[in-house]
Length: 372
Image (tube, rainbow, N blue to C red; front, side):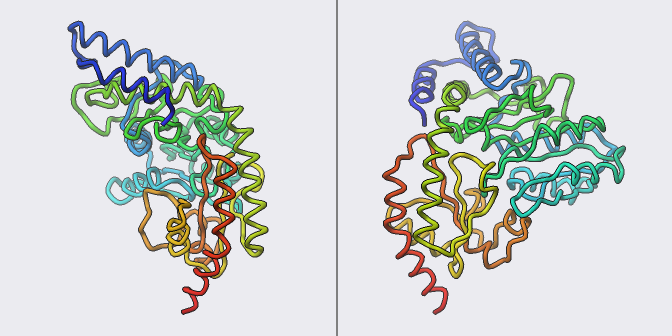
């Protein structure tokens, strides 16, 4: 966590009070929440009234996808990219399984990108029956950045609400809610140096999704529940700091990422870089290692103090190929033999040195294990 987030949370944890209460302690907490709302709005090109606090990215994605679908019934079609995080794909699939939705996965190219004409063609098959569209801003596995502004404009040409999961983008890329054209945007705290369990859905005024959970009517009567003021304060502090420092961090991480990619290619000559080689998240490097099982290689690196991932942390431990790589046209074996290395604000050149020191031997051992 960023020091600014820790400080904001620690200060708020010393206080008592419910932001929905009318007494003095409650009003003080409400002030903290509203100041946090303003900070996030100012940082991301939104109005404070458009910030709906949630428990994180998964809840925000569920609220956007389910809520907008229900609000626009009897329309049944949900268009969603084939490389989304499961926090978006699974709610869409649930709508298909239990609510009568017709979910259509938008194909991507070999770099993981949705082409504008792919979206346009999908809409025009039956534009009057499209309830909503969801395409993530940047992919959590391979790092490819989507042409969100263009895709959102196509959706608006047809009068269809457009949602983007920007969990990976906020703090890593320039993100403006008003400038993007999106109607709903997901963010979460722990991806920007804030706390886990705190996030938000930016929701354009005039757009009212049906609530996923009901209760006290907090957050525009869209998301009920007692507000976690310490977590919200930490979220806002992290977003504000991350956005202010985004350009400098992007420059530093991009250079470090490029060094990592070059040195991994030198250390393992047959490695394959996945995702767009240029238009990708600054801290993302995703590789397929031929002849390796990703889980085995991950554990070998972990034993040497290098922590990486075979995909989304939310699906870790599930023995199946990455749906992202399969959607990009990769063979199942290549998809199973892939790893993601992620750099963040604490990463240093020494971290890259450590990876290169241990990677060749780990790859060789993983390949021998795969042949036995």
